[in-house]
Amino acid sequence: MLENYAILPCNGLDKNAGVISREIAIKLCENANNKIICPVYYRVAEAKYNKIAGEHSLLVIDGCQTRCASKLAAEKNLKVSRRVTISEEAKSHNIELKSNLRLLENENTLIEIILNGLNSPEDKVALSSDETTVFNKFDYETYQHGKFLFRVPANPELYFNENDCWTYVIGNRARIGVTDFVQQNLSDILYFTPPEIGAEIDQFGEAGEIESSKSVFELISPVSGKVISVNETLVGKPELLNENPYELGWVAEIELTNFEDDKELLIGFDKYFEIMKKKVEDINV
Amino acid sequence: MSETTFMGVERAKIDWKPTIDYTSCDFCMECVTFCPHKVFEVRENEVIKLIIRNPNNCVVFCRACSKICGPDALTFPDKNATTQRIKEIRKEESNA
Image (cartoon, rainbow over all chains, first blue to last red; front, side, top):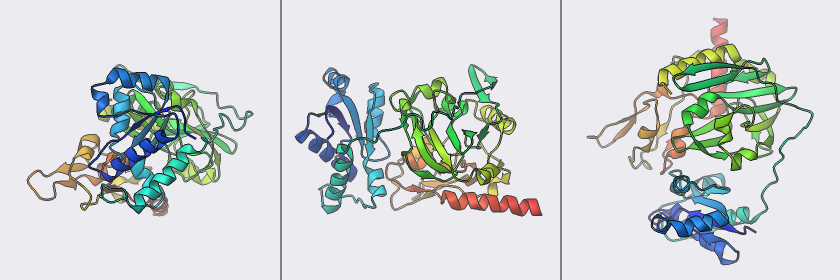
């Protein structure tokens, strides 16, 4: 059961997903030691809610993709431990939400599903699936543009896609992550949502999400396969992605299923370095 | 930014762009503010106030605008089908 959490819900009372967020927050506080942070009152009672947030882990419940609750958490420099987005949950469970502001059958079904998920023990995440696979060789080439420095590993074991994601391949395993171009573009990274352990990912499929105050980036997997491990440290310390997105900031490990085919649409250091330099010049990071 | 090729394929040959569901879109224009590639265009004085102006500026496989869309009014083509199509085009062009 979810315990000792501060819960910051969307409070969009003019939207169906907002009403659902509010109901979930209330239910989570009925039978457990959790506290609600009212997003409206937070504006004028900052000390009260900062204290609650400081003493508890934080669950943010966003109603829709506008993610007002997440943005408020970022604005107040709160560390998010768990996050749920109602519209995404509805979509993944094939529940259609309409514009009604009263809770009807669909809404109540979704609330039960989300509460069950939140009250289940969190999946234990392996930090490393195979200790014998070591992804620790990085020979960087750098490119300076104004005050920004872009590093790109030049090792032959690393491949890139044109969406600024890398993969480091050893045997049938690969690590994936984003390049310096992504982290410099996003600026201060505030959230990292890892892919699910066990998920089968297609090449160019989504393998997690990174968000800053400026933008959101969907990690586009360079390889296909099964997620066997994720970098759990990034959930609590997403700023590691800014520090070094190749080493401490790796995102996930994949058990490869079809790397020979995947390789056809990947590029090596030389080509990626040129593409990245052109992008940097075009958008003037 | 306008990309001319993607994975060696002329960008204009790749069908990757957002589609706006006008029954859901509330013309909040968050996507316009968000997208740095000028894919969208605002038409202030018309009934349909938002259109896809530069589809080929859209970064292939990027769906970030749909993630910030409150009313969930933006959709994209299937990624797998797009990948397969890119491979087909590359094959056709290498055989030509």
